[in-house]
Structure formats: C-alpha cells, structure tokens
Image (cartoon, rainbow, N blue to C red):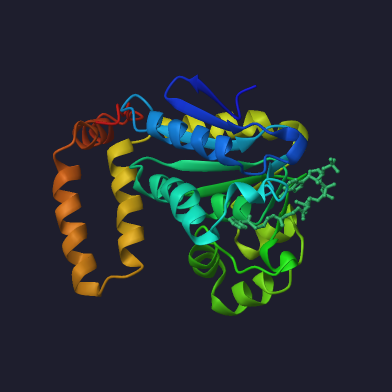
Length: 255
Ligand code: LHQ
C-alpha cells in the first residue's frame, strides 16, 4: 500500500494521504510520499493541486506510535515537515486542501499551509499539539495566526478545542463546508475551476500575498509592478483581453 496516492484528472493532481487506520498520521514514508507528490505537482501540465486524506481522517499529525523514528525532534522537523510545507508555498499554482475529516497537529498545519480549504461537514479541526504538551510546529503558528488573527489563534491553539467544520467556516479557517455526500463532487468541481484559470497569474498572486506578510508597502508595490509586467506578457492576458472584447468566456491555457 502506498502511503500517498496520486491521481490526475486533466490538469488537476490529487494527492491522497493514505494511512486511513491511523487517520493518515505522518511517518517517514508518508513524508517521503508527500515530497515526491509535491515534486510531481511542479509539472507544468498540473494547474491545480488537491491534498486530501483517505478514510475518515484528513491527517492526525505526527504518528505518535512512531515517534522514535525521530530521535531529535528539531532535526526531524527540519528534515521531514519543513521541506513539504515550503514546497507547498513554492508551488506557483493553487493548492486546495480538501479536508474530508479530522485534522490535528501537523495535519492542521498542513491544511493551513495550503492556499484554500474546503471542508466536509464530517471534518473537524483540532490543535493537537497542546494536548500532548507541545508547541504548534510545521508552520502552525505562522499560518493559523495569519488566518485567525493573534488573539483567536492563541486562544484556540492553547485550548485544544475541537472545532466543527461549521465553526471553522465561521472563523474563516475554511472557505466552504459541504455535506459529506456531495464533498467529492464539489472538490472535483472546484479543482477543475481552479485548473482552468490563468495559472501563471494565480501563482504570482500567491507569491504576492506571501510576500505581503513581510514587506513594506513600497516593496509590495514594486513586486506587484514586476509580476504584473510578467502577467502582461502572458498568453492568458492576451486571451483574457480578446475574450472580453469578443464577449465570450476566456479559454486560459496557464501560460
Ligand atoms: C493515531 C494518531 C496519531 C498515531 C489518531 N498517531 N495514531 C512533529 C514532530 C515531532 C514531534 C511531535 O510532533 C510533531 C507534530 C504533531 O503533529 S504533534 C501532534 C500529534 N497529533 C496528535 O496529538 C493528535 C492525536 N490524535 C487525536 O487527538 C485524535 O485521534 C483525533 C482528535 C485526531 C481524532 O479523534 P477520534 O476521531 O476520536 O479518533 P481516535 O482517537 O479514535 O483515532 C482513531 C485511530 O487513529 C486510533 O487507533 P485505533 O487503533 O485505536 O483505532 C488512534 O490511535 C489513531 N490515531 N491519531 N497522531
């Protein structure tokens, strides 16, 4: 059994974490599989990426029964979790976390490192770390803080409160909650819509928002100008303007 399964639907690459008996908790094999999958996601033919979990979980974070795989926690994080979180941010295309079930600990960190989250109504969001006496890692403090604001982020991450998908939606942690029966179809529809977009412009929008987190206004304006110059030379921009003039929907090719 592969710990990570890959499938392609047109320009959508779906990455399924596949250790369902452990709620897709991370062990070395899962990290390795995810790293390989994120490498494949760099293929120019892939214009949207979905990350989801097999079975009833999205990802329960570190496998606590295989903790001894990681003799030194700091080194373990740097070698396994960090490259995958950074790879998601470095992908210049949208990454959709399809949160099918519970996410906890570094599984929550993975979900919040993605660009968009949609949740099944069977999903829940659990800090996890504080429950076992740890600090949030794998970007958990970075992304949860940005999504929720400092006050709510701290209160939640220090409480281990399990949020339902509906609560997560009300907090802005996910953008949509879908009934479990309709979830797969909605994920496919959403991912296909993302994949049909002007991928280059969407990828650069992602870069710009990440840059805005640590930039001055002057630096941000400058990067916008640079990347707009790139977008302005893209085939998709030419197509967008032509389609507008011809009063028809644009057919973007991602270039
Ligand atoms: C699990 C796990 C799990 C193994 C459920 N491991 N088996 C990074 C690097 C270095 C150091 C440490 O930390 C990190 C990052 C982290 O991620 S730390 C945080 C680790 N994660 C957690 O502490 C979450 C632990 N799990 C839970 O709190 C619950 O299982 C949740 C809230 C996720 C789900 O609760 P339930 O829906 O009630 O399911 P369950 O607890 O019954 O779990 C189902 C099975 O999955 C069960 O196995 P069993 O054989 O009894 O059916 C669990 O033992 C197993 N499982 N999480 N992380």
